[in-house]
Length: 413
Image (cartoon, rainbow, N blue to C red; front, side, top):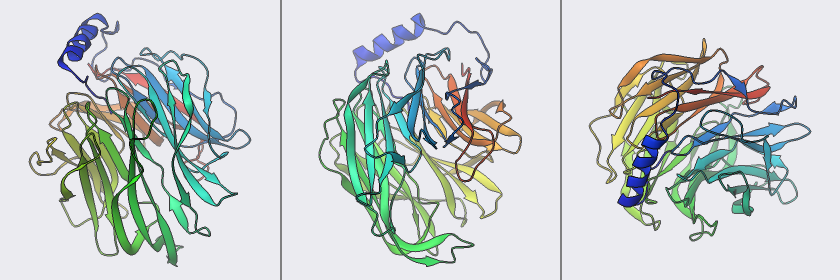
């Protein structure tokens, strides 16, 4: 997520920076700024889907998980032209085994945080953690333990956390945790009876916790789909934030969200998003502009498709901006500019593609062919609208396991 600056004077400085730092390239919107390049060191081990973030002037961080002999969470920094600022570096983990892919967020100065889940065999627990970094890649302090979730004899779980930063570097993490207590038709539906809770925790830019983890929502015991039920969080320039999630039960899946101010106090009641059809929603995404207006994205269809991407916009006060609308068949991660324009990246049968959209969720230009690869893309846009797409490359070795991580930059102006 990209954010604006905290004050009018800072916004004036940002505007001046824009005119002083307009990229040298005069590429048309959607044109590639670089060729495809490999992000990882090529160690020959297996990789998970990556996560990417950019600051206002285009600096980039890409993070991923690696399995094998050198397993762990890794990241690499790039300048706005796509030139590496150095080699990949390992993110320190409380436990050696990464359970999920990481999530990253960056503030306007280029400082960033990497959030991840690691698994501790000794204490039978999952550890939600975060590591802060300066814009040059220097670690800021030790890893932060956000939460420790018991495995409960193998039945407990903790999901990949979501993370978002405000303009000054304060950040919020959100994650799911819970337990399964009965398996139902595992060979077909991969479902289990269980309960799930959404938690969040706030941190200052110094890494100091702004209070303990707090419960966002707790679903009653019901039928959960093991691969679903994602949550997402976004933060505006001043630290107000929104947490959204898919509430899964046996008969109906719903999309819900709660809004919070910068002090972590809930604003208004929990709200439910009205879908376009009676199809179950999937693939939740959440994005916000600098003013705190936010959009919830999801797909409807299935279980075997066809899917359509649906968007529902809201003001910062939680008022719906019209009705939800289908904006196309491309489904994937979304990154939004401070003015509300956004870019979507997705995997198709012809490879990784991207699509630019206006703040009104109207497609701008044609579909952009990113790569002939077709797995696990992520996208991040800067303050100019230029964007980077990163993805898993090579043979798929099971769920979210690939041979290498690649990326490519595109013009959004």
